[in-house]
Structure formats: structure tokens, C-alpha cells
Image (cartoon, rainbow, N blue to C red):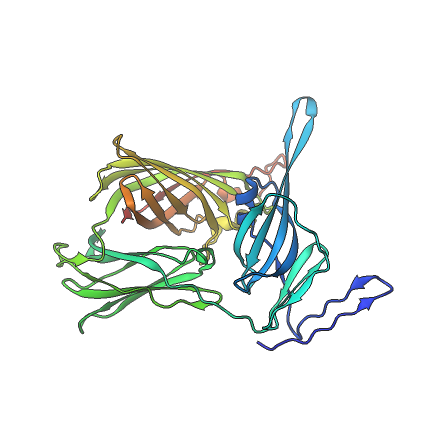
Length: 416
């Protein structure tokens, strides 16, 4: 990047601060992501408004600042009364060189509101405040790719789909927690240790922590690695693991990890708040579902679960037709109750897109039958929402009903 040359002058007649930008460059406004803001406030009514004040560069070199968040929620009362409740809080945050929220934490009290702050680092990167907004101009920032994934594991099983039958490898990993939310894709590579079968590779988007490779060759030892990519670059490979595949009937093999728990049936319901219309809103997503016909090394035969998610930005009816390569939701909570009684409970993260165009049902689990391990799962997803075909279209009486409820089903869920 070309270093910029800036100059500032006081416009006496207006009493304002003149802020110059890099030639040909557009300053990036720094905002706390809506999902981060919601996780701190616990409410979002028509979006969360922010006042952001840059404060300098953090110890790791990234832009830092303080954020005031506020949202107002109204409700009807008796006799036509109307009450508005305001939810607000302060937080500090750091951002990546591309303006993404990197880290954040709630503040106990109010922060200083310095509307004219400006600072520059040794790389020619500059942050400054203009009123209640903070901006970043980059010079030659010290880009830092994510750290290599850890906890890589793999399992191979015989997959039967329709008239097809082949060996399939599931690979799981743990992304660097510091930058997990910023990862745009991860690439899995399985290379045969001996010459012969081809090397297999696949990439998954966003915060996915597992992937499938198929078909893998029988009676073959593979060297498996994973890399993570975000806007600042691609990580080094994870520490390699080796796994030997079973024969073509799925018998034998070893290394990597144990066999996966497979639940053949998975379905449930989705509730949206405030509901989809043509007016953009961040949607709170409540998911209830059940796993059935589970078989594998764990004891449970079925489970019920509940999850809460949040869209990563304000969305409209059009989200139901889109299939984005980037994550469209963020996980808030996920609880699984296993049956029969005594099998325990698991917690973790569940991610799924808000779309009728397809996608994947994926996440992580810990505790219960997976005590002491970091289990991951993934499957194909289908969603259907009541009123989706007429979303945003007024009724003959001129009333627009938001789309609030839907159902979903997935392919068999492999947990391992």
C-alpha cells in the first residue's frame, strides 16, 4: 500500500477539523458488529445505534476504541398507552485492518467521548474521530494471517446415498479463537503417504469447523492438514495427522479419531423475531429440533435441542432466496438433551443460514456423551418458511405480515 500524506487545518470560519485522506483512499468507518452489540445488550429493536470513539492502537497493534450502544424497544399498553424502554451500554473494541470487529468487552461505566481524537502508528495507519464516528485510514499495516488450526481429527466411514456407496472422510478442527469470527474459509487437504491415489482437497466457508472428503481410497494412509484464511492472509498448515482408511466395505482402518455418532433423522422449527419484511432488521432466531435414530460409539439413541442465533446484519425478505458463501448468522446458545435419561446434556454452537436456498447445519458439542472432547457435526440443510412466497407483499387490506415461522430438516448428522 502507498503511504499517505495528510494535512489538517482549522477552518476558522466553521470551527471544524479538516481531516485529509490518503490519495484515492476511502476511510473505513469503525463499528462494533451488530452481533457483538446484541450479545452485550441482549436486545435489538430496529437495529442497535452506535457512537464510536477511537482511542489509539492496542498492544497488538490493531485499532482500538470505545463504543456506546443503544436500542429502543416499544410495546403496546392498555387504553392505547405506549411505553418505550431504552437499553444501552458501553464497550471497548479492537478492529482488523479491514474494519472487522476483532475483539470486544463490556465496560462497567461510561468512556470519554473525545470527538477530535487522532493518532497514527509507525506504519502510516491512522485512526481519528469525526464527531461520534471513528474512521481508519491504512498506510502499510502489519497484516497478520490467523494462527494455524489445532485439534485436527479425522474419521472414515462407509457412506450410502441412494444407489451410491463410497468411503468418506470427515475432518474436524479448532480455529484460532482470537480470529475465529473473522475466518472466511478453511481448506482441508488429505495427501496419500504413498504414491498412487490422488490428493483430495476441499474448502468450506466462514466459521465451519468440519468438512467431508470423498471418495477416499480404501486401505490407504492419508496425511491430513487444515489451513484457515481471513482478510489478512492464510495460516500455516495445522500439525499433520495420519489416518488409514478401511477396506471398501468399511472394515478396518485406524488413526485420526474414533467412529462418528450418526443420527439418521434431524428436523425442527424456526421462529424469527421481529420477522422478515422489506424493512431491514437484525433477526433473532430460535431453533427447536430433535435428533433420532442415533447410532455409534456414544450411548444416546435420540436428543432434543434448543438454540438461539442472530443474523450478522440487518436482513429483509431477500435473504430467503440467497445462499451466501459467507456466514449469515452467529451462534448465541445451544443446548442438547440426550435420551435415554442419564445420557447427559451437551452445549456448544449451532450455525445455519437463514435461507430457503439450502446450506449446511453445523456446529460443535461438548459435555454429556462427548465429555472431554470437542465434537463437531455437519449436514445438508433444507428450510421452509410460512408465507415466504408473499413476504413483504401487502394483503388486500394493505397489511404486511412478517414471516416469522418455518421448519427445517437435514441429511444424516455425523457427530465426531
